[in-house]
Amino acid sequence: MTAMERPEGSGPIDTDVVIIGAGPCGLFAVFELGLLDLKCHVVDILGKPGGQCSELYPEKPIYDVPALPIVTGQELTDRLLEQIRPFNPVFHFGERIDALVRQEDGRFLLTTDAGKQFLTQVVVIAAGGGSFTPKRPPLDGIEAYEGTSVFYSVRRMDDFRDKDVLIVGGGDSALDWTLNLQPVARSLTLLHRRDEFRGAPHSVNEMRRLVGEGKVRLIIGQVTALHGEAGVLTGATVKTSAGEEIISVDAMLPFFGLTMKLGPIADWGLNLHENLIPVDTEKFETSQAGIFAIGDINTYPGKLKLILSGFHEAALMSQAAQKIVYPDKKVVFQYTTSSSSLQKKLGVK
Amino acid sequence: MHFIRGEMVKITFIQPDGTAQTVTAEEGLTVMEAAKMADVPGIEAECGGACACATCHVYVDPSWREKAGAPSDMEEDMLDFAFDVREESRLSCQIKVTSALDGLVLRVPAKQF
Image 1 (cartoon, chains in turn brown, purple):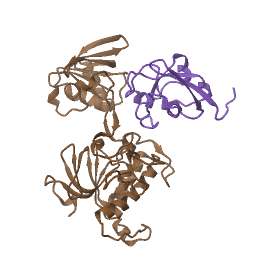
Image 2 (cartoon, each protein chain N blue to C red):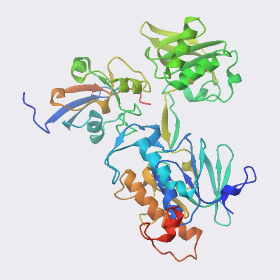
Image 3 (cartoon, helix red, strand yellow):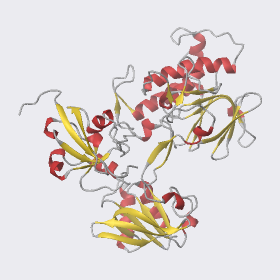
Image 4 (cartoon, chains in turn green, brown):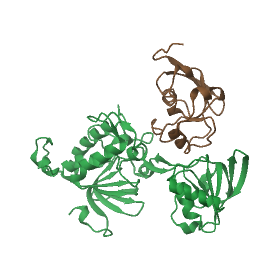
C-alpha cells in the first residue's frame, strides 16, 4: 500500500522515502528515486516548492545549469515540478521535521512540528542552508522576551487584544498584521526605517488611511533597545531622525525576513562539520545508515555548492536508497532514452 | 586615467573596535567577494551575493559616498532587512570594485543579522 492511499490521521504515513527540503535537489531526488520505484514524501518549512531558488531569488537568472544557458530560480523550480509529476510525490509544505527516531525494524519515525508522522525506510536531507526561520533582530536580551512579548508570527490574534503592539518592518507581513491587529490592539505602532513600503499597494494605502485617522501610529525609525523584566516587555527605544524616545510596548512583532538555520537536524545524532553534514561520495550517506544528505547541506572533499552537483548527488544516492528498500532486487542500470520500462514510468510510452 | 583591466584596488574595512584591514581586490569583483576572499569578519553574505539577505551590510566612509554611489531600489528594499541602517549604508555585494574606488574605506556594522 502506498502512503497516498492512507487517510490522514490513521497513524504514521508509510513511505519509502522522506525528502526534507523541496529545493531543486530535493525535487530532482524525487525523479531519480522515482525511476527506481521509490515513493517519496517531501516536507518543506516554506509554503511552496523551490527552496532558496523561489524564496531568495525567483527572478534571478542562473547560468550554470547544464543545457539551460539561462534560467530563473522560479523557472527551474517549475520545470523540475513538471519533470517529477509522473512520480506523484506528496508535498507537505509549511512543516518542519522536528524529530527523527530509528525504530527497531530499522525504519525511521519522523515527526513534524505539526505532529504529522512518517514511517520511512530512507531519509534524504536536502535542506540547503537549513530551514528558513524568521530573523531575530540583534537587540540585547531579546531572547528573554521571545514567546512572551516578542513574536515572529501571529498564532492567535486574541493574544494581542488590548495590548500596546509594536510592529517593525516594511513588507507584506508587517503591513498585513498592522491591518489585522489594529482593531484588537489597544494601540498599534508601525515602525519602519524609511517612509517607503515594499508591501502590496492596497495594504500600504489601507495602512496610510488608518494612520490618517489616528488609529495607527507610524514612526519612521529603528528599534535600538528593549525594556522590561522577566520576559515581560514594557517599552522599546526607538531611534528617529529627531533622536531617541522610549515608547510603551507590551508586544513586539519584528518582520525582518528569513534566515537559514540548521535547526532540529543538529539533534539527530549525525556527525556534523560546521553546520554541514559530512557524507561519502559514493552514496552520499551520512554517519547514520539510511540517512542521506544531498545538495548544499552536505560536505565532502572537493564539494561545490552548485545545483548541478546536487543533481549528481541525487542520482547516486538513489542507487543506494534502492538497495535499502529493495535489498533483493537485481539492479540493472538503464537509460531513459532507451529503456521502455523507464519510459513507462515517465508516462511517455 | 586609463582603465586597466584587472587592476588591483585597495579597500579598507574598519571593524567596530577600530581595527582596520586593507584588502586588495581585483576590478570587476564585488566588494563583498573581496571581503569574503580576505576573510573580513562581519561580512557574512549568507545568500552568496544575490542581494537577498542583507548580511553584507557596510557603512561607506562619508568621503567615499559619492564615488560608491547610492543603493538601487532593490538594494534599498533589502536594506530594510539590515540592522542599524544609516544614510551611508550599502550592501557590499552591490558595490562593484572599480579603479575609481581605490582607497575606499568601509565600516563593518557592530551587528549583522
